[in-house]
Amino acid sequence: MGALKKLSKQSLFTGLSIFGMILLHVNLAFGQNPLIRDQFTADPTARVINGKIYVFPSHDIRCDSTQGRPDWFCMEDYHVFSSANLTEWEDHGMILSQYQVPWADDESYSMWAPDAIEKDGKFYFYFPSKAKNRDLESDAPGVNGSSFKIGVAVADQPEGPYTPESNPIANVNGIDPNVFIDHDGQAYLYWSQHHFFGAKLKPNMKELDSEVFTLKDFPDKGLKEGPFVFEREGTYYMTYPHVANKTERIEYATADNPLGPFEYQGVIMDESPVGCWTNHQSIVQYEGQWLLFYHHNDYSPDFDKNRSIRADSLFFDEKGKIKKVKPTLRGIGVSSASSPIQIDRYSAKSEVGYGISFLDDSNPFAGWKSTFSRDNAWVRYNQVDFDNGQFRKVKFRIKSKDNDGSLEVRLGSEKGELITVVDLKATEDWAELNSDMKASKAGCQDLVVVYRGKKSVEVDWISFQ
Image (cartoon, rainbow, N blue to C red):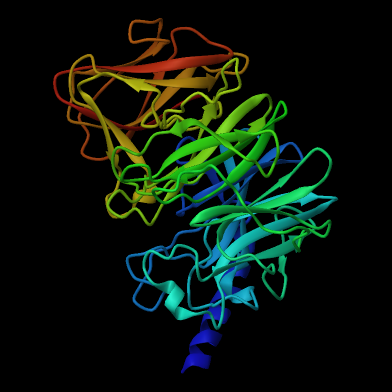
C-alpha cells in the first residue's frame, strides 16, 4: 500500500505538471494586495531578473488527515511568478515538488520558505524540507527547524525547470534559507534554527566555503526566523520576523560586514492586529523604488496556515534607517483604466458607510466586493493610468437595492472633480451599468467613488472604455 500510495502521488504530480504547462500562458493574477489571487502563497522572496520582478514564494495548501500534520502548515511544492508592471503577475507553474527531491521526506509536506538567486547565468533555488530517516524526536513541538535540511536546485532560467541536487547542503540544519551575493562576487548563505547562522558559499553555490558562524546580537527571547539580507550604500541590512510579544513582527539590524556583528535598528512592520500569527519578508529595489514583500491570510481569515503574499512600498530616512511600513490593500503598481479596477483594494475610505466582504464565502479566490450603505460614503483608489485620455465611458458591475441613488466618480477626493455619474436601479443579481464621462482624462489619476442614496449598493469593479 505504501508503494502504491507513493506511485499514485507521483502520477498525480506528473499529470498536474502537464496541465499546469497547458495553462501557463493564460494564468494571470491581477495584483494589488494580495498579489496572487488563485492560490495560497507565503514567504515571498522577490528578485529583479531581466528587467522583471520574480517572486519565489512557498505554496500553502489545505491539509487532510493523510498529509503532514492536519491544521498545520502543509506545503508540497513551489511556483514562481513574475511581473513587469507590478500589477499583472504570471504564474510560470510548479518548479519543484517534494516528490522530485531524492533526500526529502515526501510524506512530510514541509517545503517551507525558499529563496532563489542568479549567478553566472545559472539560477539557484534554495529550499528547506524534512529529510528522510531523520530523528523523529526532533519533530517535537517547539523544536523549530531541528529536523530540516536545506537543498538546492539549479536551472538555466528563472522559470525552471529546476533540477535538485541529490543531497542537501552539508553542515546546514534549519529552515528559511537566504542567499546574498556581495559586490566582490562572494555568496553567503543564511538560515535559522533558534538562532541565525551564516557561512560563505563556494563558487558552485552548492557547498559551504567557510565555518558556520552564529550571528550575534539578535534577540534571545521569542522566536526569530526568516533571515533576509540586502545591501544599500555600504550597509548590510538583516531583516527577520520576530515574536517580541505574541505574534511575529518584522524587524531589522545593520552591519558593515555580511556576517556581522549586527546592531538592532527597529521594526519594519508591526504585528498583524488580527488574523495572521506569522509574517515573512524580502526587500528589493525595482525601477528606483524599494519594495517590501510579505504575507497575510487575506483569503483564509479563519485559518492562518493558508496565507497570501503582499507588497508595499518601503522608504529610508536620510540616515539610512527604514521607515515603518503600514500594510495596505492597494499595494503596489499602476492599474490600467481599461482593466477591471477592484476598488475594494482601496487606498482610503470614509469612516462610516463603506465596507468590504467576500463575493462568495465558499470561494474566497472569487475576491471581494464593496458595499456602500450610507449616503455620502466614499472610497479612494490611487494610481489609475488613463494613458493619453482616450476613454469616454465608465462601466460598473453592481448589485443594488436602490432605484433612485447614484454612484459618482471623482478625482483626488470625495469633493474633487466629477468625471461621471451612474444612476442606480434595483437589481436582484449582478448587473453592468454604463455612463458617459463628462471629460476625458490622461495620465495617472486617483479615483474616488462616492455613493448618493438612501439604501445600499454593492460594487464588484469599475472600468473605463
